[in-house]
Image (cartoon, rainbow, N blue to C red; front, side):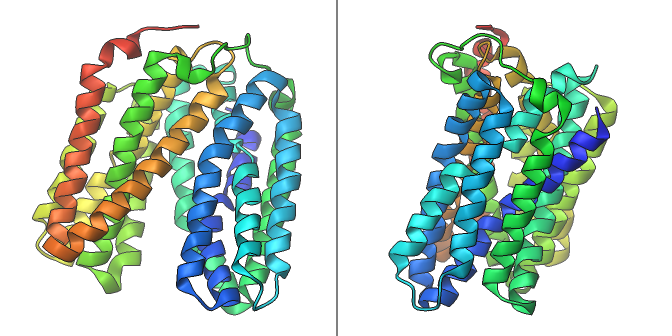
Length: 367
């Protein structure tokens, strides 16, 4: 895998995990209301879930260059507009910016995954490395934007994210493999025309519920240590991804079962130390699962729709995570963090069941 392309993609994607929390704290500073800020963050997440597949589908049909450069221009402008809004600006202005931003975040991750099979001999190992790199952005991004907001201002933090997003995306779009890439065929009906892609979307909604529930459960179980605990969870995923990149193929069903069991085991952790240990082990199942799913998508997505298929998986996880967080909040209030982790394990079991019941669709191909 060309290291330059991979490194540039990490830079281009680093701002994405910054945006939700960055918009939240910026909106609260401007409006003075956490309720209004929550609406802004929710609208951004919804728009991101819609915009990702639409932009990726356009990239499949028209190539990556125009889509990446155009979306970077719009997203950068939206972030700049958010950064200069004055204190007391109406919440509607922030909501409008959130919609524009969510619909235009460049689909760099999906574009990179579409390129990998043509650049490497072992695509699954490359997908494992890519999933590991994604964890780095989620570990580093939110603390960086919060630090910048504290040291300078939330507006400057968003402006910095804008510069990083635009510069990284332009650099990625300028690389030879990205400029030359074209989807094969027209993919009539889009990626969701493939039953196997729909299966993976269902699986990833359930996996997203696991993630959303665990985040709430960790916050409820170790409130003062929630940040470090979630960092340990991400570090476990990093370690698992590095191992997966070395050992290669693993069956998706086995990985989903390991993910479900490991996150269910969080319910038995009786102390913060035990929770940290189990979180590390549970995290180690995440990146390998992503790698296996990505390799499956590349094989089963209809010709000309692979970038869109990757984007739908991101949307599925986002939907599931939001659902999981909402359900877990109610469970945490009524039954405590152990019950939340049971919910996470149950969602993992649903992912396993969907994968097993619809396994035949994952062996088929509509290419």
